[in-house]
Amino acid sequence: MRLLVVEDEKRIADFLSRGLQSAGYAVDVVHTGEDAVERVHSTEYDLVILDLGLPDIDGLQVLQKIKNRKTIPPVLILSARDSVDDRVKGLEQGADDYLVKPFAFVELLARVRVLLRRGQPTPERLQVGDLSLDCIRRRVTRSNEVIELAPKEFSILEYMMRNRGRPLSRTMIVEHVWDMDYDGLTNIVDVYIRHLRSKIDDKFQIKMIRTVRGIGYMLDAPDVAAEASREPMLA
Image 1 (cartoon, rainbow, N blue to C red):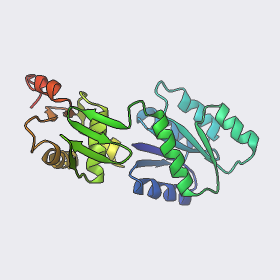
Image 2: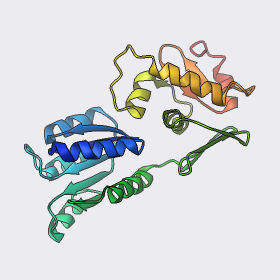
Image 3: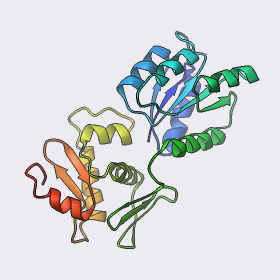
């Protein structure tokens, strides 16, 4: 999951970024409204945490611009404006939740998780062929055999299963799973895919993770993957 934190106070932004990364999320941070609008229109985020007291544009104006997108991420307002009127106004203008500063990080994290579950159209238990992933318990099995995955391996597998049958570029995988931009040089995705294959494919006759030449990787059910292997673009 990739989150955008819009917060002009560096101390708070750093605190949020570190805490959310420790919880397993990829986090981008911007300090102005203009940067927030630009990021939201250029990157697919699963959630936006938005401060209202920004130095250039009022946070509610940023909220309106975010809500004008065709695909709208959930927005959690984080603000020192604590009156009932402020909270009502924020929610009426499209925010999905409103948390007043100062706040306890555990509460913010709980609200983030609720919003991500609410905005996620796919089930919390993913199934592709005999491969099963429990998003809540973070448990993976194949043919009823439990498979232990490192956090990044789990995140990549979850992303691929949620996009089953869809070729995913290395850029898409890096930007969704890591808090970094793909620079065209790193082989980090290939390394992790090799790790994943060794755990979920190597012991089994049917292989699920396919290499899409010139693009990246794809995961699909055995019957679909077998059919796809006949196509010249797949290896």
